[in-house]
Picture 1 (tube, rainbow over the protein chains, first blue to last red):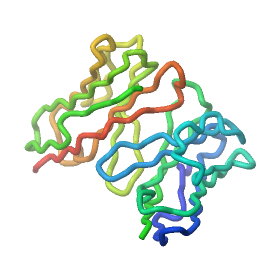
Picture 2: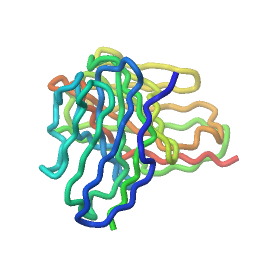
Picture 3: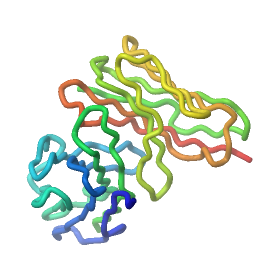
Picture 4: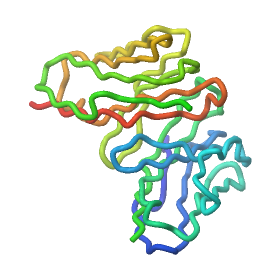
Length: 115
Length: 113
């Protein structure tokens, strides 16, 4: 079946603009995760959803970052007033549940470049 | 705060060699440890997951060990092949939030034909 998909694959924007990044999880997966990966670093946890609600948003760096999952499937990560430091690859993952032993399946990521 | 460190940051070896990648973590109160593979422009693929009560896991030519008390894990790759070239990431999840994975910076592995 289809894996986790993310759109767009690349996004170039100017400092100060608003961007939305989309994640389509594997069908039937109730848990969805967002990570950010800077060059040469491992992914950094941002937020995870169990169903429609954000179960843990402790990784969001500031209030410019917001994520939603209104119907418990597709999720959108929203970044307001983008800054050059926001440039990174944003990864999405999903798992069947949020259980500890559940494997997270990752999408290919969206590469965001803020000029 | 949990920190995960991977050494070396990059490694290049000739095809056929056995090799070991190292991972250390500062807080031994982990729920599990995973090794992931990341290819350029692609997402992560989970290779091996070791529960905190386990000492090792094996899959094909890969063997991962876990010493929770010392905060260390190793990934052993036997008879390396050019197709093994990728970045390997070590990651842990803690009891306080088992769904939140903390990653190391990875080891970029290159296997020379």
